[in-house]
Length: 204
Image (cartoon, rainbow, N blue to C red):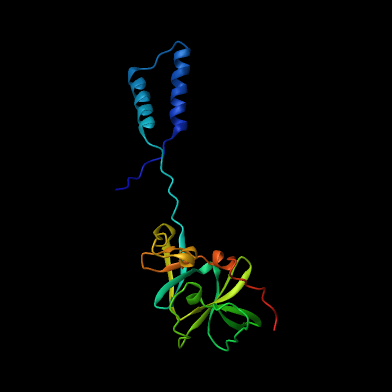
């Protein structure tokens, strides 16, 4: 049970103590009742604990999507747009996790398939699948999603570390897991991983 504590008026307490000091130095005396009152006020002030400074927990806003039967989240601060997966152009001589490229507002956007990057089951391109256009560290790319789930807000302290059973890149590329079993992707770590090279966008 939280109690609301009044702030201690130290200025007033010090003023009363100074008043007592001056009176004693001048050879005067205060009435016994006044001395008792000052000492009682001082005792109460010193007995009160310092007021706690509470800072609100950081809130994460996540865009949640489905991928290979699991739920994954991306911080909304990285999300540019969600678009239907259309007119995907395969790119030769690229790693398996690069599905291809799409035209996004006049720019070429590489689309990454995290199913292959995270060693998940690959069931092909789902009907109604999406591309999540993201930006991190000044680089833009797309993320393939089987379907979109929506936006969720959680406290940063509600996210648990990735389970120990998650091994390899899957563990490295996750910030953590929410209570709703949403695996939160660490986009900055993914984008700067040596296995991934996301080139600057080019005009088309």
